Length: 153
Figure (cartoon, helix red, strand yellow):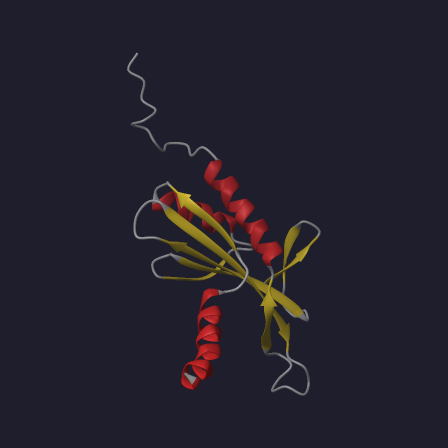
């Protein structure tokens, strides 16, 4: 009985630690072709794409900072952000997860002042990017659905 009491807090910490992946934004049940979802994500990434993984299912944005309703390149500022966008699912419906990570420049006491260290996540910016992706997905694509749009008479 005493072993169970000792192990219970560790199990609770393990389960709660794995259950909370951080704050981000999600779009779920997207019933669109994967190519259209990828186009919407790539056109919504702040300042363009820095890297992609898993055949475009993971996208990393260039480093940016937010300023007055737009994204500004962040080259040598104290703080910078980057977006990590994941497209989940092997077939329709897909889901999209958006995470914006904040980094700060290392202090003089740390290894180097040019190294950035993690400083948390920004859920507000993740929601802004989610809104941009939703807008891109809602736009009517020219030339798509040519079979569905064909009128016999």
